[in-house]
Image 1 (cartoon, helix red, strand yellow):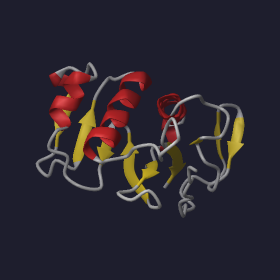
Image 2 (tube, helix red, strand yellow):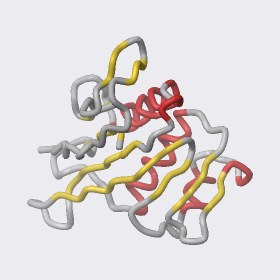
Image 3 (cartoon, one colour):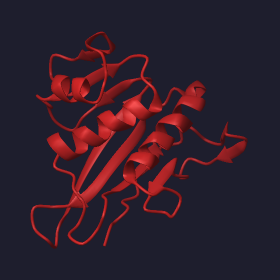
Image 4 (cartoon, helix red, strand yellow):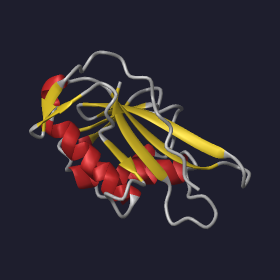
Length: 159
């Protein structure tokens, strides 16, 4: 069973018009599994597309990967903040440069903060950003599907 964890949302993006529809503060940008996407990577890609289309808000987004914890009956949640190409991870990620290179990002596109928690990626497509985040979730943050499931859960919401 997969769990979607809802976030507490501030009033920073009240009723933004995006994609031709009004978005309320508590509306998720995307959720998986929801039936709308076959994989977490598809949902993450769509989240980056939507956030890119709504760039005028310039607010932070919480990207939440959720999967099985270290025991079968536990959950692991990794919340990553994102805004305009900048990722803020919940902890230092020492393997950021190798993950970025492996998914096809050029070294010149990636700027890693001195704390290795903050990463700026310039000029990447939503597909590349999604591949990068998926690899970070799986390889560095330990997000994995629950036993018997095909994929981990993902949600994106305005912060």
